[in-house]
Image 1 (cartoon, rainbow, N blue to C red):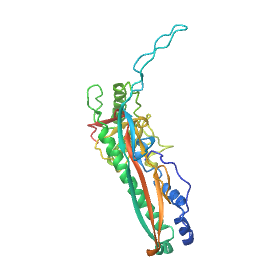
Image 2 (image 1 turned 30 degrees about the vertical axis):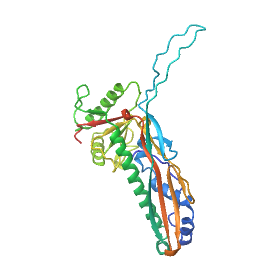
Image 3 (image 1 turned 135 degrees about the horizontal axis):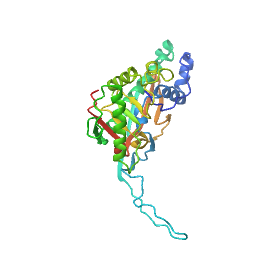
Image 4 (image 1 turned 90 degrees about the horizontal axis):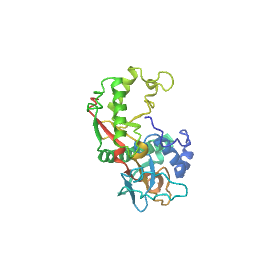
Length: 312
């Protein structure tokens, strides 16, 4: 994928001794670092909903659909004259409620003695994958339900045809980007990111590579497997994408993730994810817990455009 959120954390060595692993299991801070390494660059929810909000009391109030311009135009002011007042408009008030997404994973003393850090990494990876699946799935579903602005690549005025060639893909995206920005002049959106299903992403990447439109030296897409920013556009994908058509978004204005910090003994966290270890002496094992209390918030539904009839 072509995004870089969250930033990489400090490394935790994977070749620790049995004693060192037990010490690590007693340190939520070290576990958090290890979990962050696994989570790094995985949440597409945090990438597309780039805003960072704090939910208090289990919910967040926000305004949506607010234009960036004042209701009145500026006026010429004579020397010594008074400035006219304008009433600033506000958007529609909405509310969203947070959900706590969490999982426990057991790690036994026997598994640590026999395989050292491997069972801990396995538990953390499962926790990370579960958290990513749940949070990304909900966030992308919310985006799909809120974004209703739709445009066909064969519509009059922007008819560039299905995405059967590399030229058609680039011309089609740029034409629809310009159309959407003209339709929403009062909001000044900059549609800069395209979200595709993995199969669509593969087809688009293949056509752009074979068409010679991607660099073959630095940032070589064939070697990296990533479509680097091209024509000011970022191309991204996720296995959790629920929509069937590509979506073009202004991710700086689309919305954000509102995380709630619950705290609690033994929990430590960063960027929304909190972890905790629970020693179970009765079974000679640990429970590793990871949770995220969050809700996706779409502030500007018009900051997204669904592209139809691409043929991919």
